[in-house]
Image (cartoon, rainbow, N blue to C red; front, side):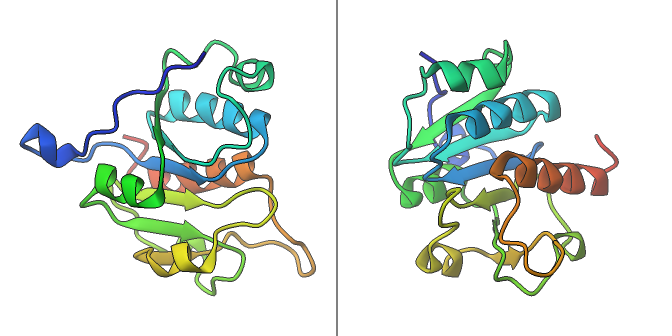
Length: 168
């Protein structure tokens, strides 16, 4: 089984200095997407946060196969609810990635500690969750396209945020 890290909020540490970006999947359904995100987090230094319900068990073979041997290197945290994610990442800004946003993801100035939030593969982010985000952005696609693969969208987002900070 892939063991997530504790989810205590940074405020509990007595200090808060964001150094990395955070990827968050709300109710992910497809194991290989999460496995790919584990690998992405390990290679970019990002934290990966999963908000339940998950459509799979973290010990599924497909999660492990997609993440290869990066599970030990990734900072993975699981939250029972979106409220728990907010508490664990406060005071960070939450940026919702959604196909319904008008602002492009490249038009936002990202800050270390930002939570890059994505919805489930089949239905995206619920409107009530989108409404709680500090910003809403979209990744451009050709007209008529529905959505990008979840792990691919997360990669586009985290690399843009990281690029804006000189990959440091």
